[in-house]
Structure formats: structure tokens, C-alpha cells
Amino acid sequence: MIDYQIKDPSTRANSFQWLEEENQQRLKEHIYCRTYKKGQVLFYEGDVRDRIFHVIEGLVRIEKTDGTDSYCYVDFVGPDQLFPLIGLFERDNYDVSAFAATDIVVQFAAMSLFEPLVVSSTSQLLWLNQQMSQQLEKQRRRVEYCVTSSAQTRVVNTIGLLMIEHGQSQGEQIRIPFPVFINDIAKYSGTTRETVSQTIKALVHKRKIYYRYKELIIYDKDYFSHVAN
Image 1 (cartoon, rainbow, N blue to C red):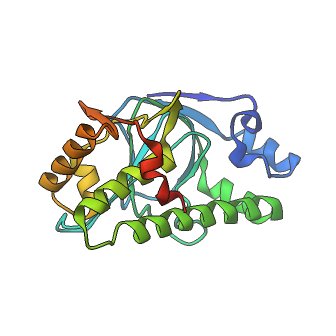
Image 2 (cartoon, rainbow, N blue to C red):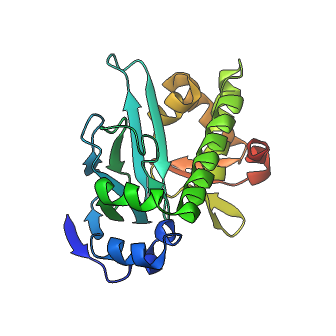
């Protein structure tokens, strides 16, 4: 990991642009960048919630499990996103774990500095409210499209959600810019590895997707676009 202080956080992170100029200057003096290699840990569930992060490059994997590992929540945070938003102003510890899904560059600042600055800025609070609303909308889509009784449909919908939330256009195709594991799709979809594997094989055979060595490319985006509603 490499830490370095940056000269102008407001030009690198839209997450902080709504602070008043004086507060941006205060933040500038205490915000740092850090690089992580794929697989490295940013923080674990239960760690002291002492930093707020902003992704500059790459993708961060968010996880939460119960004590028996029978429940697992998985999500991803991409460039120009602030995290973790859950627990702001009220919790002492992180309620999720965060790992580098790819090589990443993040900014971070102390919560003890960030939260008072946010409270003093109506514009920044409104921006945070919008971000939280977007997160709620994302979770609404996940609940709506991943509770159907058909396991195969849940797998298809999960791939569609990955496309909508994280896909990167490459001509007529859409690529998911991080490794997609069968286990993760199974957790998203609430089904088994076997069902996911069978469904993916059928989608590959129909030329709806490409999937090999954890690389997922969407060939037929219209087939999955219904989850955008």
C-alpha cells in the first residue's frame, strides 16, 4: 500500500465538491490517497468506523455475513463513489467488510473531520441524501427482481443488475469490469452453484453472454435490460 497526500481533493473527488470553500481547504489538509492491490483489505466488519473512503480508480467489494455464514451480502463500489454511507453520524463500527476487487486507488479522510464538515453544509447533506436514495433504489431493484420463485429467472435478473449497475460499454457489448464468481451470483440470486452454472451455460449457448475464467460479457443487453425499470 502507498499513502500520499493530494494537493486538491476537490478536483479528484466529486463527493467533496459541495463543501464550502473554507471546509474544502480544511479537508484538503487532511485527506490522503492510498493504493491497494487486488484482494487487500480496507477494513473488516466490526472495525472502528474511523475513515470515509472515495474510490478514484478500480472497484471495492463490500461483504457482510452472519455468524454461521448462511447469509452473505455482496456489493461493489465503483469510481467516484463514497463509502461506507451506512452508519454515518451514528455508528462506532463498520457493519460491512471492504476488499479491493481490483487494483484500486482511494481517497480517505477521518470520520471525526468529515462528519462535522458535512453537518455544517446543507449542499453536502443534500448530496449525501441523493446518494443514499440511489442506494435504496438499487436495493429495491435487487429485492424486486431476485425474489421470484424461479431460480433461473433470479440468475438472469442478477446478471441484468450487474450489467445495469457496473457494466462498461464496449461497442455493442457490455463488460463487467471485475471477476464474476459463480458463488457470488448464487449468493445474489439465493440459489445453488449448480443452478447458476446451468443457467449460465444456457445463456452462453443462446449467445446472450460470454462467460469464461470469471469474465462476464453481455452480448444481448436488451435481454437483460428489464431490470433497469
